[in-house]
Image (spheres, rainbow, N blue to C red):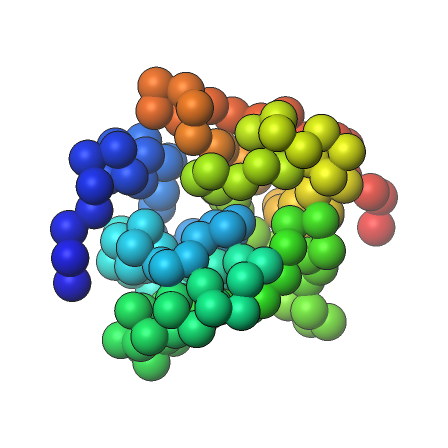
Length: 146
């Protein structure tokens, strides 16, 4: 496994990860950060979503060991379209690196993406993106009542 770039390593190091967490990575292809997160959360799970079929395929290839171990899953979806599968548990933490819908480059997509992400997280969960030192937290809209 190749080492993370210093920037990506700093981002992963700054995430408040705990063993057993369920983590959602938005736009996570080709899976470099997800592989490290999967190691750090032990028996938890990281789901990587990416809008690109090629990116999803690369992540599956690069993270085959973590996928086989049941610690990492990959799904093709954009943040704006993401929904939990029926019966799927919500996530404890979400993060994104260089995702235009969340970093202000695409404001209208960002509003929808934040609503979709909030709906897939536990009430206490937090969303982090790059662009801080090294992360910044994005405020999420109120979760819909069950």
